[in-house]
Length: 194
Image (cartoon, rainbow, N blue to C red; front, side, top):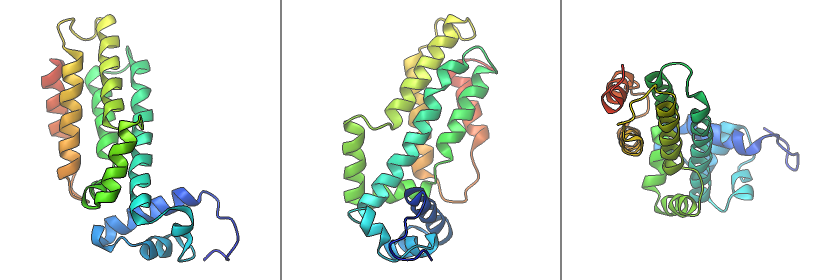
C-alpha cells in the first residue's frame, strides 16, 4: 500500500490494469472503486481523487483501450506491401479482440459510462470509426500495390470487418477462446485472398 500523499507512478494505468484483473477474475458485478484500489494496492479513495466516480473511471478505461487499438490500426497502412494482406488484417483483428469483453461490457451495463464513451467518440476520440478508416486506407494501399484486387470495395470490407469485430467483442465472454479461425475465414471471404 502506498503511503498517503506519496505520488504513485503511472497511477492511471495501474488502476486500469487492476480493474481488468478484477473483472476477469470476479466478473463485472464485482467492480467497485474499493475492489480496484485494493487490487492496485492503493489507498481506498485514490480512484475518486482522480476520477469523478466509477462511471467516469470505466469510461476512461474503455476509451484508453480503444485509443491503444486505434493507434495500432493507424500503423496498418504503412504495412502495405509486407507480409500477407490477410495476415495483417487478422493481426489487427486479434488486437481488437484482445480487448477484455468484460471491461468493454462494463460501459454497456453502466449507462453513464456508455453515454460518456459515445460522447467522446462523437467528438473524435478514437474508436471503431478510426479502426475502420485505417483498414480502408490499408486496403487501398494494397490495391495500389496490386496485392488486392482493384474491384475490392475497401470501404465495405472495412465496415464488414469492424462490424464483425464489434459483434464478436460485444458477445464475447471473458476467458472464451479467441475465434481466430472464424476471423481468418471472414477476412479471406471479404478480400477474396488466401
